Image (cartoon, rainbow over all chains, first blue to last red; front, top):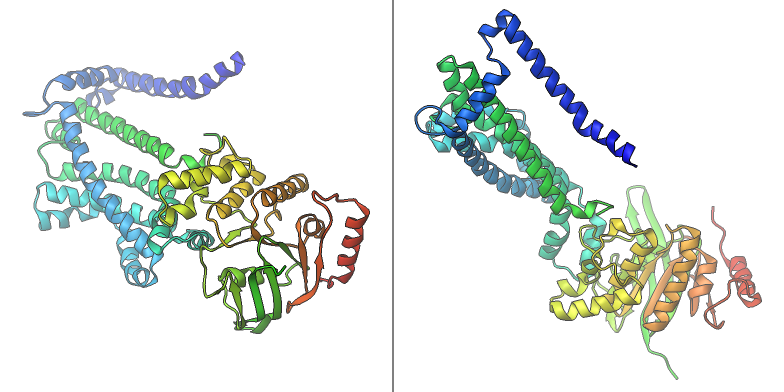
Length: 263
Length: 252
């Protein structure tokens, strides 16, 4: 028993740690002993700068956590609108044939366009303010949420709809008690992907035009040729991305408990 | 003593019109089910038994003739006619309690009252303590108990059971037959039970209606007045089993 738990720990903690350490060592060796050092700071320098920026402003006003919060606020605004709109559009397409016939071709056309492709248009339409960024983030997440919700709405078990009607449910009751719950796992899959594409979109939007946010931190680093600052931005993005994904998985575990056997 | 007729099937025919032609599935079906009677519709596989149930519950409408349930002509699905399905058809996202109280809940019965009712039927089917479990956490037999409690809890005039144990293993099947017998003796209801298993039919039925193979109609009726609980291997049981099997239309 104890032996196997050590083995398990080795699998989940030790081995991945080996990978990280290897990368850091190779990074450090390359920077110390080759000319790459001219282009790259050492891991320690990046760490020092990361800690420094936690308390000291990057640029004029904001510390790293503040920049992160600004980006996060933008993402959540766009993501929430994308979720609400995406769920409504996805379910309408999945449940109502005429809407599907009208909306689906348009949607299929919009679907392959990556979120960042909307940046020029967004700037022309909405300027360089928050609206443009929200729009870009919205476009980044919306598509994924629609695609998944639509799939869910089409997979609703029609026999269960029959059961609900036989037990006396009205159409509205059947919608809220059968259609919606059976779509939830699909909606969540879409929201998980959507949140990460929104997070990518906010960085793109900030890199094109902004005065704050993590995307700006990276671009500002490029402007003043400060590699350490660029790395700080990149690492902050990665960590926040991981945290958001973990949060979504946590929410899914709570909302989709009924799918787990062992709960 | 005249018994009160709850289901009256009068000259019912059903034709399905499809691209490959017209299929007469039910041909001049006549039978009556009385109050609190446990009737088994028995017939060979694919003989149209499920269609007959769909006609009774109103999921399908007859092409000819009419079906009267509790004095009302069947014109569509209604919560007055409950159904237990072969593929349990539970709401996977609801726990046992919420599944069982689904009917009363959508019909606007207060939470306190419907909880009390649901608890009563959960206890009746032997699922006390599993109220908060989700269907995926239950075995096939337990899921079917939830299906039965859900149908009972809506307090319909009749309960139709469409081969409810068809998917269960033999052991669980015997157990569930016993359970249905116990449940229906504790809570008298008018039940129409469809099966293609002659043992199950004789074990459960007050009366067995033997159906012809397609197009289906009543071939023969048997009143089973063996004492309950019945013994699967008693001479009377086996004799009746022999008789019904002999009368039954062959299937392909």
